[in-house]
Amino acid sequence: MHILFVTSEATPWSKTGGLADVCSALPKTLSLLGRKVSIVTPYYRCVRDWFLKNRGAEPEAMYGVTLSAPMGKNECRGGVRKATLDGTNATVYFIEHNDFYGREGIYNYQGVDYADNFQRFAFLSRASLELIRRLSLEVDIIHVNDWQTALVPVYLDTLYRSRSRLDSGISFGRVAYPKITDVAGDDAPLFDRIKTVLTIHNLRHQGRFWRGAMDSLGLDWSLFSYDKMEFYGQVNYLKSGVVFADAITTVSPQYAQEIQTKFFGERLQGVLRERANDLVGILNGIDTEEWNPAKDEYIPANYDVEHIYPGKSECKARLQEELGLPVEPKTPLLGVVSRFDPQKGLDLVAEVAGNFIEQYGVQFVILGSGERELGDRFRGLAYRYPRNFVLRDTFSVALSHRIEAGADVFLMPSRYEPCGLNQMYSLRYGTLPVVHNVGGLHDTVVNGSEENIRAGIANGFLLYCFSVDDMTKALNWTLECYRHRPDDWQKMMRTAMSCDHSWQKSALEYDALYNKLLSKI
Ligand code: ADP
Ligand code: GLC
Image (cartoon, rainbow, N blue to C red):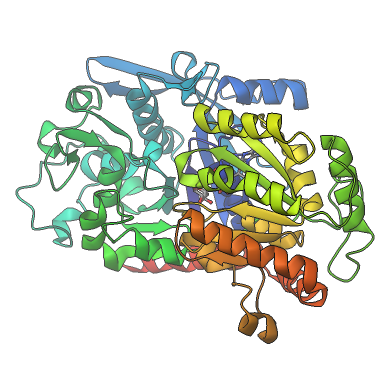
């Protein structure tokens, strides 16, 4: 089975969030399980810089391979560079198009989205199919991720396959389907065997553009209808992917349920419910080599579940020192590593921090950047409580590891959370997470209630409502356990550190899904 991943981000070359982690860890695990795996992703400037810095040369250019696609009146052409995913034999194809990808940021410049994102990512989608044709790749599954690559199933189904998925009468009470343009020609057999999987990492971001964008996609305008690509007068890439993909997954079972409701559905709940039979939630894993307190090279002392101390206390002391906080072993240290985005619910942290500092003298460390207003609130707290509150408004992988290891508690009160990786890193590092009971947080954190602690299954703390009140209650209880129930706390740490969130299990679930799709005619 050959699985081709198409993604707009992949570590270590390009990353803005968890999407990048997943899009290299999942292919890696599948490859180690013996599957043939390839990745298609843009050759951004940061990718080139990574290769120059870490390999001393750009990845190998595939001379003579040009991918061209009609995008409206223009013919867009891209080149291909090739590399191997470290530790595997998976091939990575970088799509090179200097105008589209040779820029400073991945999606935006200084917080403003590039105006041509609709073209940049439509081209990526189209180019991945042209790559299959040009190299005669025998691909069984194309696995696409989020809105940026959600047009792959649309192009495949309407231009390259000889028979549309929608023609099999599976979907929507739809009207006449546009004729398939035979772009594939003699290559149709290469495309007819392929099934597509679309993974939704975050439903909020849908790739919505003005209707005129249709003119540059090289797709028939008849697709611009409510049951296909149109969404309240705009073109919606993610919705289009949901309609055309053979299967849809999202990154936790709980989020798979949530997105079918009005509250979490971001106005796509109806379309998602139509596809409920083809929609599953598969929990993300974490890279247990990168995030391993027993081997982690970023942290000052290593530890594991059998020998938590003195390693973890050493990590805490060194972190306090690094941050300029008083080095006090008994003072609870609460950490955050996050994008500053309304999704993450960090306004609750800003709201309650002052009280907890004044009442209990706790310490906070916040690593993250993004939304200006939230950053300003945190800066205000750091100014007001210099001995208790530290903000590092930057992106630092090394510091993120040191926070995971050195803090006692990790805060992640997200309004919604498709999966979330940081709470799983925290569990592994014995840093108990305090989270809102949604999405992947619900699926990974078991609340430290009396009953759950007794049963030995508690590994963190939950807020059941997104409110200042619940945040205060949850934190009060967390601190009560930390200070006055040291045995329970140790027990919870051990439970947390013993959770297995390696990719192995999830990768097998994806594998089963691919097999199921391929066994359908
Ligand atoms: P999301 O993708 O929604 O941002 P996740 O929890 O899935 O949330 O993934 C976030 C990823 O980005 C994690 O790997 C986390 O460590 C990393 N991250 C976020 N902000 C920072 C930062 N300021 N410095 C270092 N790593 C960060
Ligand atoms: C998104 C989600 C996050 C998830 C990540 C990887 O960025 O916000 O919850 O963990 O994708 O799937």
